[in-house]
Length: 73
Image (cartoon, rainbow, N blue to C red; front, side, top):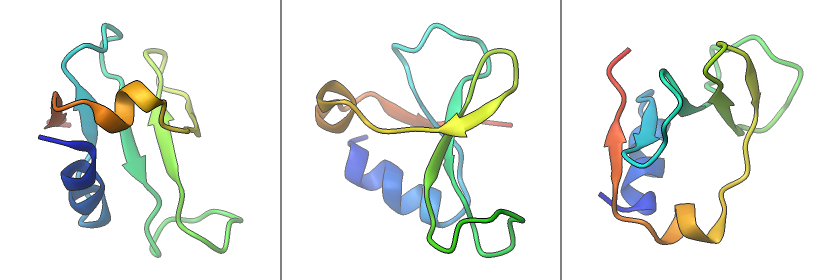
């Protein structure tokens, strides 16, 4: 699927990843209203292979790729 569909699914609570990512467990998610955070606006974060969560910004390659899939947690 494309990045637009991945964003739509993240708004519904899904975790997304790309087939080309080689870090086990890596995925991106969008903060939800129920999440406890200090931000007043939603943002996308990535879970790294060592299970840390950091804000994430898409690259051109990420935005134009068609290999997005739902990450089963």
